[in-house]
Length: 227
Image (cartoon, rainbow, N blue to C red; front, side, top):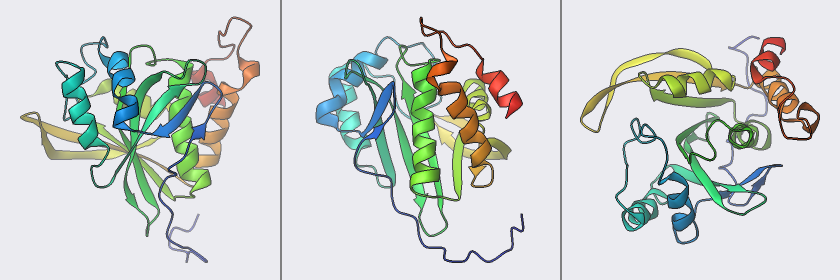
């Protein structure tokens, strides 16, 4: 690919939808503090000890403090949070955000991810991230989708690579978070990467890849190795 080639017909990309993004197991809705506070707090209240370690907020003492924070979070400039909703129970399972949308250049980021214990490391969690990626790359046709995390956050870095993001380097002394230095690991999927990444997600999430008890027949790692 000639990265210096003119982009014929390029126009600024739209912002993410304010409606629902539907999947088989979960759907994504723009986060509403009035609607989601109780359910989200219930989902994350008893999560593992490291859930909040690398985020600039949390943990929260109670539902009231969480709700007050969430009300501010949803109106943060440049942040477009979505709540992950279980399709069967309508229960909120976690939250993630589209953010830093550079519409003119076609760049957007996924971040601020906090999933409850019941969502972490599940097929539904993989589907939630896929729905966000597909919306950005297919529906909105962004050229570049970014994932950034604390360079010490091994779990987030593994997730980025598992989901097809390419490591691009570390920004040293990028931020101060909760009084600690943060070096930031930088990952991205670009439009040229996306067809193979999408195919891996679709093959793994397909109903025929699961048995009658919901167990996967082919591992994600095997799918990624083939694709």
